Length: 82
Image (tube, one colour):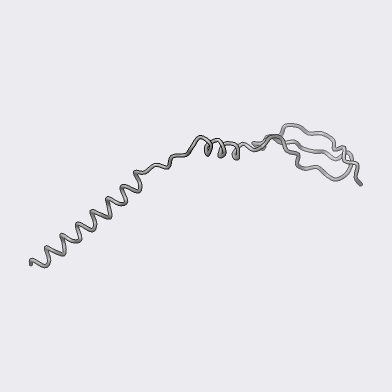
């Protein structure tokens, strides 16, 4: 009987220590510096208008998009190729 109580007590101590470790891990918050947050925001918004959809010949339609993927302008290409 004494051995059974000792094993149960040991199991309870191990479970308590493991539970406390999990609690401490979840309680710690990740602190991001202002520079890190600024970098994340810059990467999320893009660098400005980009040109997509241009064909390599004069008179083709080019579509200009902003960093968020919104259509900004549509114009004829002035490409001097083919």
